[in-house]
Image 1: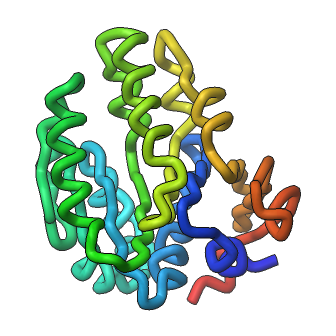
Image 2: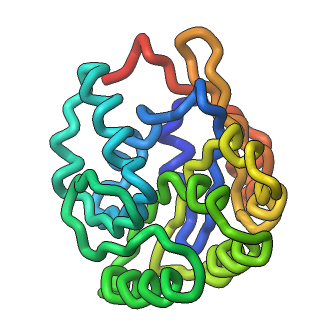
Length: 215
């Protein structure tokens, strides 16, 4: 089944986890998500220049990335700006970061419309956490926005990076997410296996993205 069908079936208030390894980064699926957003605003949480990396990879693959200029972006750390920056936060952890983020997030999202909210690179922040408590507090923040029907949150997470940390938070992220997808690259085809979903239409399904038919 085509990946667009998956994105179109997501529901308001969901927290979706798309987990991949470092050799199967689904940059084209991120582009597909932007296209499937349709009339929804797209608000990207960009941790440590991950959006810039996605954009460069797509450009070098021959993909038109002009849509990126219209993305609204909350930028956490990093130096490369892409899209329309609605707020910028340093990459330091703890209470200050969370308070700054909450203020920017509420200002950016609270206009009554449904927002598609991709989150890129949060695994970098999680492994940089100075303590297990700090990581758990970040996960608590993610959990606190579960069910926020103003948005559909889609976390793209490199599980290879999380495994390098002293404490791997991936099982907790899988538990709190409403939909969990595992991405694997087989030849030129990316397969997206839905490991769980609160939506019966998605649960247990497999979707694909074939590089030979990329538009």
